[in-house]
Length: 80
Picture 1 (cartoon, rainbow, N blue to C red):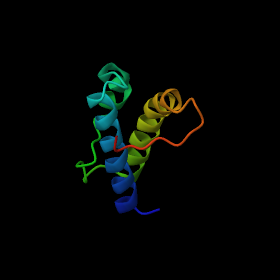
Picture 2 (cartoon, one colour; picture 1 turned 60 degrees about the vertical axis):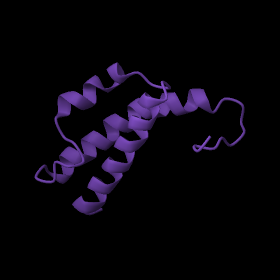
Picture 3 (tube, rainbow, N blue to C red; picture 1 turned 120 degrees about the horizontal axis):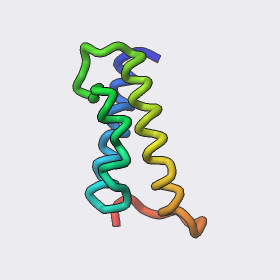
Picture 4 (cartoon, rainbow, N blue to C red; picture 1 turned 180 degrees about the vertical axis):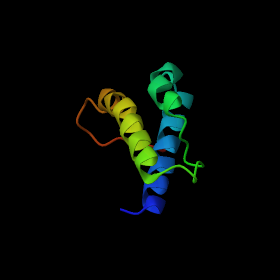
């Protein structure tokens, strides 16, 4: 993948994370590892590897939260 694609995925995951925090499905403290990286989707000067690491950390934080909200096996709409 190109750096631009990593930045795009990073931005999408950051939006999902923001949504989960706003809807109290995830606590902001969960993102301490992400905050320690210091790489944001707007940090276009950072390397592709930095954005890849941020994607991995965000995914690790989001995944358990999504598994908890999807326990009944039915598809749930994001737009409630």
